[in-house]
Image 1 (cartoon, rainbow, N blue to C red):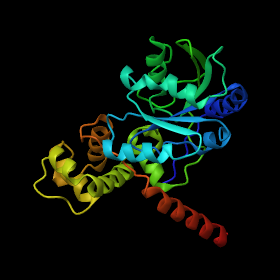
Image 2 (cartoon, rainbow, N blue to C red; image 1 turned 180 degrees about the horizontal axis):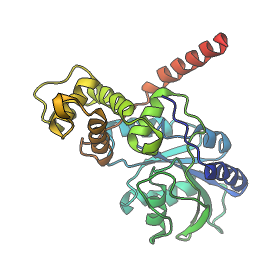
Image 3 (spheres, rainbow, N blue to C red; image 1 turned 180 degrees about the vertical axis):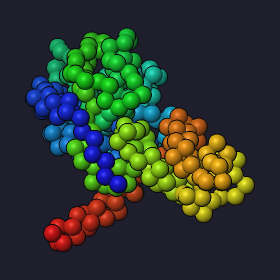
Length: 294
């Protein structure tokens, strides 16, 4: 599956980020704690590679806490980088942000605020974070991706000034698993993906990672052997069987994805740090093979 969803305003956002960076002390990148690798944007990473970076793992209340701890440790080992798990509407988890930004921007004198640029893909919780930090509704919040459309600056206390930007997704997502994870999490508009295809991938992934959660949620007596059978079981329990016993895979996929996104399956993470090297190697080999055939 190749997802290619890159609205015109995102091209503009990329230019705005590039123009803003020379005046920025710290880059704050918001990631989805359930998929920190897949929700990172390599385009933005390339633009901001010389800046200290604070990675905020948003939606940490929906993610597997043990795996989130692995990701925090993974990022904190990187040069000039810190990471924090956050919940965008929980001020207690947001309190360390200003102090960590000051630590990262150690060259900034006490006489002025640290200037931070907030970046992230759509629907990762960026607008909710901005509103919580500001203590009032500044950024528009929505469940659909790409709500923020323009850059804006917000003063947070005396020591931090943040610049918000529109969410920017990859121009083209090459890693197949990342494509599926982003679609499953809600970062991709539903109209830009195949629900049944994403539902089947999600079913297969969750069978491997969280079988007990699936059995509890859908009251399964035994674990299905594959994703297709899992979707069939979900359809039977959630009004997804048509006349003649035909399975409505779209309906079953909707149920599974909505349960995942809403936390009804429990705290779920879709990737671990140890998953990524193998996926990148597989991707490089696939691209190499493609180049040779051409």
